[in-house]
Length: 347
Image: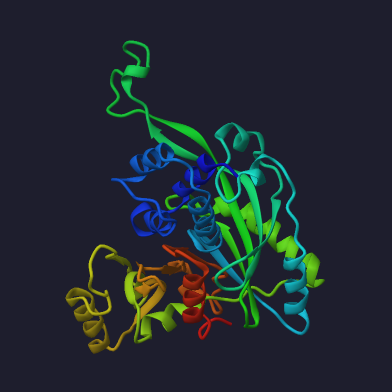
C-alpha cells in the first residue's frame, strides 16, 4: 500500500461531497480541488497515522460509495454461512490487491483487463463486515477530436469530430453483511456517467460466489414497490423522478441543485394536484431520494438512492427492479441508513 496509490484512489469519490471529507478526517489539509490537494499531501513528510486513517476512510468508501446495490434475501442458516465465509476470506496477492485500498497504476490495470475478480479479503467496517474483491473493468467513451490532431484538410466540411476511447478502471466490489437483518448486500462499482452494463461482469461474479456458499439460487429483492414507498414517505428530498399520466406522456423531472424537494416544488405540486382533480394519478416508474446525515464528527453528507425503473415497467403486471444506484455515501453507516429506508418497501 503506497501513499500514491491511496491518493489515486481518492478519484473514485465525488470530491466536494465525499473525497475532501476523507482527506480532512485523516488529518490532512485540503487545497482547492483534488489535484492541488494531492500535490500538497505528497509534499508533506509522510505520517503513518494519517496514512492509516486515509486508508480506513477509503475502505469504507470502497464498500458504500458510488455503487450498484442489490439485496439478497437470507433464510435459515444463510446468515451464519455468509458470516463465516466473510470472516475467513483471504487476500490473493497481485498488482491490483497490492494497491488496496487505493488504485494501481494504469499499466497494471490494463494488464488485468477482463480477468475474474480477485479477493482482497475480509474487511471490518463501521457497520458490519464485507468480503471485498477487485477487478479491471473497461468501457468506451466518446471524446472530441480536435482538428489539430488530423492531417491538413481532413476535418474540412465537419462541424465536429468525435472518436471512441476505451477507458480502463480498477473497481472494487463487496458482499456486505450488516450486523443484523435478513439480507446481504451486493455492492458493485458504478461510477457516474458510465453505462450500467459496466457493472454486469462483477455483479455476475459476486452472485456466483454467494450462490456457491449458500448452495441455492439467490433471491434478489425487488425494489419496484420502493418507487411509490419513497415518494409517499414523509422524509427525504425528492431530487429526480419519472412518471406518466394516463399512459399518454412520459415525463422526467430533476432538481438536484435546488434545496426544495420536488414533491413540494410549486410546479410539481400544482401538476400533481391538477392530475388528481382530473381523476387521474401520477404513474411513477423512477425516483431518486436524498437525505442529509450528520456523521459522528459533525460532517454533513447527502446520500442519494435512485430506483431506476423505466416507463415500460408501467405496462407490466409485476415489474421487477432488482437493483438501485447509490451515490454520495461516506461510510457504511450511510449505506445502512439508505437500506433502512428501502427495506420497508422491498419484497
